[in-house]
Image (tube, rainbow, N blue to C red; front, top):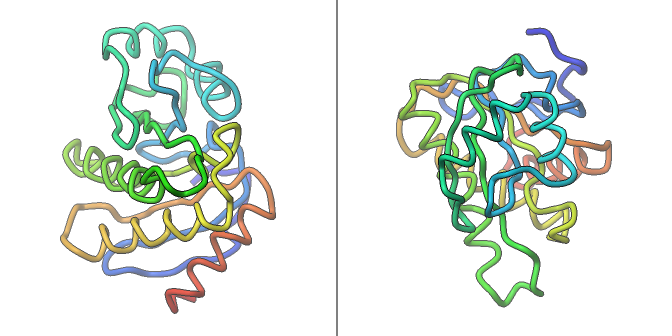
Amino acid sequence: MNETSTPLRSAQVGPARLDVLVADITSLDVDAIVNAANRTLLGGGGVDGAIHRAAGPDLKRACEALGGCETGTAKITRGYRLKASHVIHAVGPVWGGGIKREDDLLASCYRTALSLAAQHRLTSIAFPAISTGIYRFPPSRAARVAVGAVVSQVAAAPSGIERVVFCCFSPESAEHHINALDELGLT
């Protein structure tokens, strides 16, 4: 793989290897990268804007045709100018203090993205730290939700997924994901 960083931690869950790394998600050579999208799917700030810029204008046109996406779900497009052949646009929840089903909605983003990857016979997928930017989801809690959702989904049934990357934007974010793996005994 042609990546900007080597994994800081790896763990095996059934047939899938889980990697935690700090990198630019748009540079990863995986079948799909997950976009931390807003409900319009038309681009925004942070990772969403970076993915749209790197993929080019065809991504926005494809997203316009999708008609948006509900919080806690995801939709898939081609990757266009990205190394990844697909982009899975997952809409995470805005943090509201933990009383608006935020954990469930965030977990659903990861499960839905993995299901879409399996339906399209993709074998590798990279996730950003969904909802931890302008949506203010507490990063440590988000990492536990993310890792827990991915581990349970990958372990539950064969999906063809061989590699899941938690692509973190900072060493601190990576540390939260490593701690979440440690809490599950996956070191």
